Length: 140
Image (cartoon, rainbow, N blue to C red; front, top):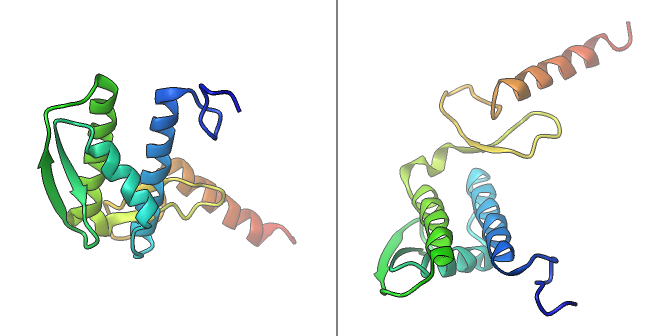
């Protein structure tokens, strides 16, 4: 493997952002299913958050601890901002509104804003209704 690439083939900071994206997705998926957080994903988010002068840490329970240290680069600050938003979402009252889209082949996660909302957006809702219609009328 090239010394400048991480194990996924990303270069430097791009790999750090991809790792954070994947960890946040895993945590949101776990929250949408009502499960606990994977320690590895939580550690990645907390590490990214800790790179800022002021950061939040997600605890085992859906809680937050705030920490401070005046060091870090611009990339670290951006990663920390993403991590901080994820921590705030995952430990906040909106955690219960996290859902996975129910449309066929959709992998999106969203915040439920209506009691009957099942899809991330109108396109997925239309796709699901069309698939149900097609399945009902396929044999005719």
